[in-house]
Length: 205
Image (cartoon, rainbow, N blue to C red):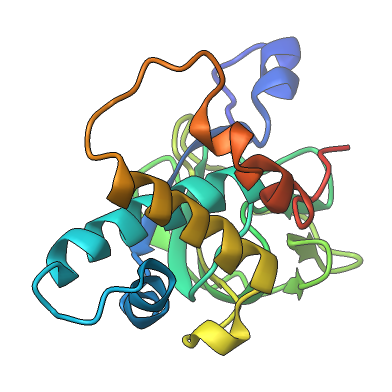
């Protein structure tokens, strides 16, 4: 059975435990460069590389703060085992599609044949279809790998305006202040970036 070498209480505690989540295919944030230059009132291309670095860092900050993917991106979630529940909670809304669901048996052989799953786009979850059970006889560690796509699209127009504004506030601050500061209140909080990100952040229940 799944995690058969462990005692029942340990198996229950570790069931569905996330090992890690990585960006399989990072998003391209280059569509925001023109928006950032307009925000900064920069008309030449001399600082494009610098501004793009600020944009990339700001997008990452806002995505973490809002638990949201801006541009489309592919993520890989690895679990030690299937959960006790009939769903797997994914990370970073909005969910667009499930690319693959892979399990590894006790011989470390990969299997992608289990397809009795449904993408819950609203709940950002992977649902086990009614009447079915998660695959068994899996290895004890990193036994489940899920690759999925999340994001609002590939254009600036598709992004939530408040998140774009949060990115621009950070870019503007970093463009004007190239070195670290010593203020007691972080610039991100002072400028309302966290508040803007919080407007779309799903609560963790």
